[in-house]
Image (tube, rainbow, N blue to C red; front, side, top):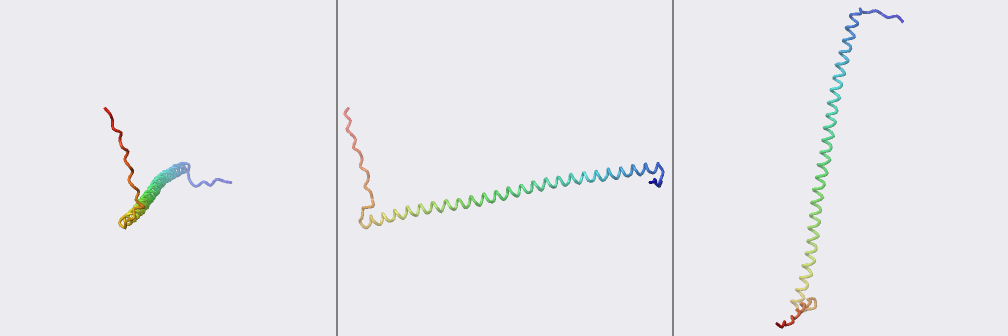
Length: 115
């Protein structure tokens, strides 16, 4: 295989330096592009994490609201049952029945102290 002489040694040297310059420029551009892409990826990760946390917080808020409503309803049910029992006893007392009312406990008499 024969070498084809297209230019002089000096021109080849210039072309070689030009080629190296172009390669270094593109490498520099590629490096900067990779940096930018990494920064974007990092910011996207942060945004994704922030969105996940926001969703979790919203879910916790709705769960707390549901729990509060449930507990309030449970308290209301208990109060309504107690009120119904008291109302039934009051109706029995007003009609003259005292069977549902327990007598008051008797007080223990104190022994007289002798001084």
